[in-house]
Length: 109
Image (cartoon, rainbow, N blue to C red; front, side):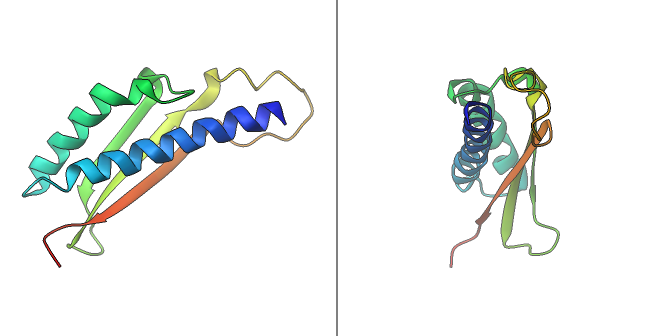
């Protein structure tokens, strides 16, 4: 339970970073401004989330190719350094890469 609790805590932090970055991006008038806002948010804030080592985090922030009225922030986190992988050998564990994304609607109504 401890190992999964740590993993779920990290996964929740990654999801929250994606959501917070997407909410920050809504202030941008175009894709370039939204990307700049996401970069600034991640750089200045991601290290404050539990279980997150910023050096292990990568992200993409782009207008959606499927729906031009949406902006998507996708985050990948290399979780290999979490202290859970050797706690209980033989127990099935989730993958070592956590992927989460958040989507916002841009441009008014």
